[in-house]
Image 1: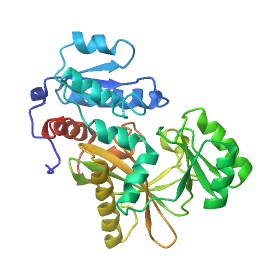
Image 2 (image 1 turned 180 degrees about the horizontal axis):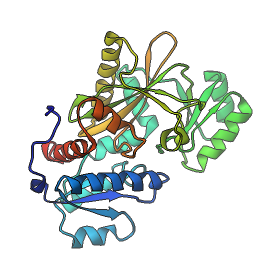
Image 3 (image 1 turned 90 degrees about the vertical axis):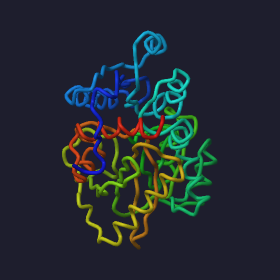
Length: 314
């Protein structure tokens, strides 16, 4: 047994509502994550049931006996603090980070500003609201660039661009998902993702894909995405990466579990991209891979996440 495992009797969690689905652009991923989490909890002996979050949620929270909630809602409406606030108003403990950390982490721009204020490395960026902003960003940052909606996950609406025409088109496409669009300096080099669980940093994963970047298809559909565990870094460099991600999570106020995405440039320096407070839990997802490398199978992982909802007092 590892120190991360829950030692609690599964029945001690009471009746657990697994919240998944929702209305965000990440609904389909959330449905898969929620089904996997629900199956694992029930197999472990937890009295768990699922709620596909819709317009009847308030009625269900009021009518169903619920002792705590396992949030597996990705994106807005579940990962941005609003669901956390609703559950707190209802007096229902929940998994993961609290209202403020959830809202902050969902906002890529505000997260970057917090990191910058603490001297943590994150790529140079600009906010796009017009074609004039696109021209100004191109002049300021150069190419290539990565365009992303500020409040979406799963790489939805993201595009790598190499010129001003592509940048304007990508900004318009991203604007369909979010009124606030972020553009970042492209960091050329390997990508890593680092999960945290109950205050511990799990083994980093090195990512490789033939796509231009680790996009939605590479994350959830493709079978040619490469996952490296061990991540391929020398021990001192791997520890530097883990320490950086721990500081990044602390800066945002992360609790329970999360996943940080990082790039490494040609000089070996690391650059923080974003932190996810409700990472994916599908068969392609990264946190379960990292947990396995730390000695936890999927069932043990979901129990540890659920147990953290008790330990943090959420």
